[in-house]
Length: 263
Image 1 (cartoon, rainbow, N blue to C red):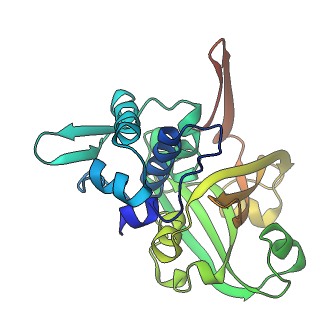
Image 2: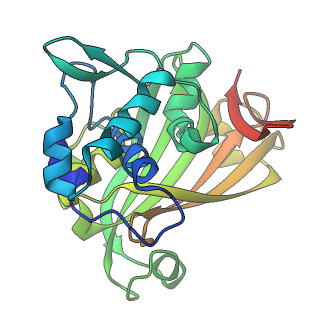
C-alpha cells in the first residue's frame, strides 16, 4: 500500500481547532491501526510529507516527535522512522487503536482468530441503507463472523459495508482487518466509531454459536464507523458473551479512558 498517497489523499484542515501536526499524527496512527503501516516498512520521510501535504518541516517534526515520545515509532539512523513493535501510551488520542475486537483479544494475551460464517453481497435493507447513507437496495457486503480468543468464542458480529469500497472483499483473509482492505481498495480511513451497548440474554441460536447456554447474559454492541470525510462506511452489530467480554472505565484528573477487556 502507498502510505504516502493515503496520508496525502486529502489536505489537512487549516481551519480546524486541531493543530496540523496532530491531524497528521492521527492519520498515521489510523494507518497503523488498520495494518497499512508495519514495523518493517519506514514511514514516509519528513521531506515527502512536507511536499505531499504542503506543510512545514516543523509541523512534521513535531508530529514525529510526539509519536516517538509516546512509543509508537522509533528512529533508526540511516534507515528512517519505523512503527514500534510494541504499542504506545494508549491515551484518548489513540483510543481507536484499541477499539477493534481483535486488538482487544490480543491485549488479553490470547490469539485472535475469526471464523467466517457468511460473506456475500446483498441489497441494503432500508435500516442498513440509512445507517450507511446509501440508497435502499444499493449493494452492500454482509459479513458474519465468529470472533475467537485461543479458539474459544467471544462474540458473533455481523457487519455491513458499501460494496463499492472493496468489491473483492469475499476473496480476502478475514483474520486481517477489514479496515485494512478498505484502505487498500478505496483509501477510506476510519476516523471515529459510534457505539451503543445494551444487555441482552442469548437465544438458542446465538448461545450455540458462542458455546454457552440459552438465556445466558450477553452484550449487544451496535457500531457505525466513519471515514475522514465523516461518511459512514461500516454498520455492525455484535453479540458478546458477558462472562468473557466487559467494558472498563477509568476516571482521573487527566481525563477518562474506556477499554474493552476479554477474559
